[in-house]
Length: 99
Figure 1 (cartoon, rainbow, N blue to C red):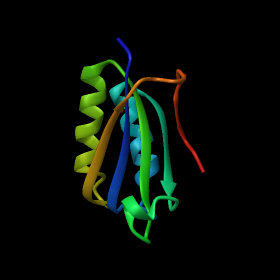
Figure 2 (figure 1 turned 135 degrees about the vertical axis):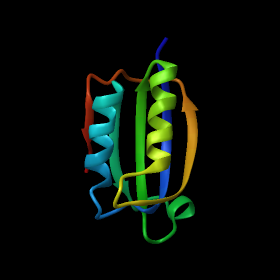
Figure 3 (figure 1 turned 90 degrees about the horizontal axis):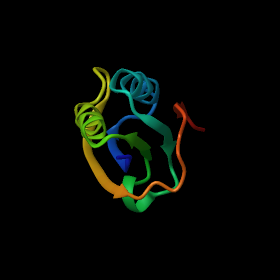
Figure 4 (figure 1 turned 45 degrees about the vertical axis):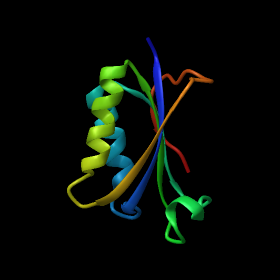
């Protein structure tokens, strides 16, 4: 059964290749969705922005991806990840980096 989660990732995650790393992890894990830098939620990220991602797949793969994101890439620093489970409104074919 398809599960979807929306993550808000806080920390030193902009300008360190975090989006590209997330796309690679999604391919390895076998999930679909998207990732982007976000400066439009200062209430969540503060003034420096953060990264948000939507991940779809079976529950085991989605949970595995959440754990990968919480660990972060070797050059990033993840301080916090807000996790919001959602009903899927659209089905993604792959995983993309959005602007």
